[in-house]
Length: 416
Ligand code: HGY
Ligand code: MN
Ligand code: MN
Image (cartoon, rainbow, N blue to C red; front, side):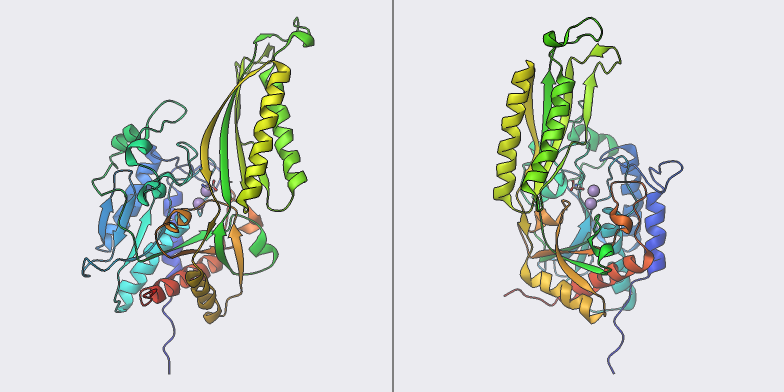
């Protein structure tokens, strides 16, 4: 009689998710704010590292502050099956985005260690610095450096809105490590993450079998006009950057209607200076986030967007400077790992659906260097990047058990 498959300890996983979620907690909500390399991020890092230490894992911290914990006692020449995600959050974050992937990975390793399962290959779990990119663009910065997609020196010089650099902030919180970048290429990588969208819930499906990640294009615009009196200045004499910012905002929304399909566009940040009721703004700084699963279409949208920005600014007599904050092409995950995720969900009797990821993830960087895929679990109301983000314990448990099974199966894959 075959023994029942091992199961993660869902109470322990939820307890850790809630404990980590208390760090940077936003009063009156279940959300938290742990922007990358802030004191709250440091506190979250310290807590998770304590849990890693308690399991006796070999822990490395690299030059960008990525932390990877690997099961000890294996021949150093055997590369690990790695999982992980991020524990930095957006400023209005929830308790599951990223955190689930790291803590479920830790839970998988603890389950394996305590159930005495013999492995030919070690498991590892990591968290990667500044996945959100909300403070230091681009997003997935730490995993990008880990896989050699950006030189460490370049990443350390990136600054936030206050001019503080990644390198200085890493030093300030004590997480600039000696581990090498690029980091050691794992045997394979699989990441559990909340879907952050409505599909699984709408279709009442338990597991998302993620086939890839859509392309991401982030642009910062600085629009410079003429500050003047709101009452005395005739409209024909105005050079109003706020008007151009509003024009661009409606234009990118119209582009999504025109292109349809997977195209999305978001103006998430608009800052006016001096931002006063009776003063026509001197400058408007704004961000535009464009994404599509098809890079050729995304490039067409970017071209239309850039052309409109130039025309709208010229019509209003406003100067414009653009800065690319992030540009990542769509990524396809490894078919063999995707098939494994689907098979493991089925073996547990869980419904599953193949789907792309609308959000960026550290897995899209590991897909550059090793066989990689992702597992999604439901987001209630499809909400994320919002303090009300929630995933029910049953769904957390289902996702983490599939992660356990996939990682164990990967230890026996030689991908010949
Ligand atoms: O922006 C993203 O898709 C991710 O949350 N960093
Ligand atoms: Mn995330
Ligand atoms: Mn996120």
